[in-house]
Length: 302
Ligand code: SF4
Image 1: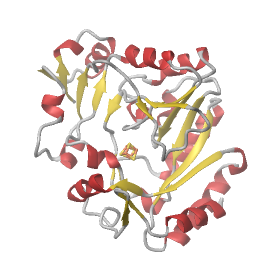
Image 2: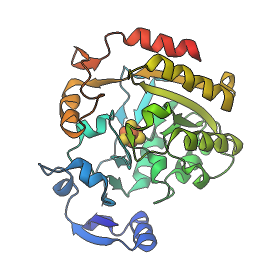
Image 3: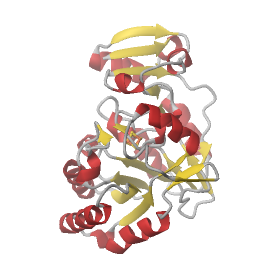
């Protein structure tokens, strides 16, 4: 493992935890952007390099949730971005189109993120935004303090969405306002989700999460309109129904959509049937022409 570490980040417990646990090769840096924002980086190669940037986020503030996303009835809807970038490399992920660098940035001043969350009242706070936070749980137990906060503050709904199978690393008996969302896709789509666990492992993790007492949800988002997609999603939903009682679980469903500029950049990173699909561009967004029908079809299967 290689860690670029901001000089001011050395004194934080997460940094010391990672250094003690992994004995990485350390490269001290002044500011994470000196590495992260360089031009002409090879995103895919960096994704395979087990390299991280540890940094301190100045003036932590959350992003207001987009009006295109489900706010779950909360007026206060804010994202926490404690990590920028992901361990996985899904070909449909906007992160590839947004960031110039494949190395994840871990902000080590976690208490500043928790304090910012504590300032909010009656709020919905996704904590796995621009990352898959649970995928990093093997590096540091990021969820522990969020679960403690959820327990202390029932007016907050804290959501972590994941493709990871790291549920065994989470504590038992969390409060119900800690929502764990499992992002599931058919096995035929897993090939586009590079480095992420396959469907079978995610289902196993989901079952374990239920056993541990987690309030869970399933996300079938994005649906990918690949060849034979109707048959693929029909078999997928049948498989899910055989594995889990879907009647007790909320399922969020959406089809691929992306800001057109991110898509343009993503096409340079992934030469893929997803990125090069002839989407309809409207209001700067790329979407399937028949997005509505695609979503209705999959909803009808559940
Ligand atoms: S797991 Fe989520 S955040 Fe990570 S690359 Fe895939 S879509 Fe993006």
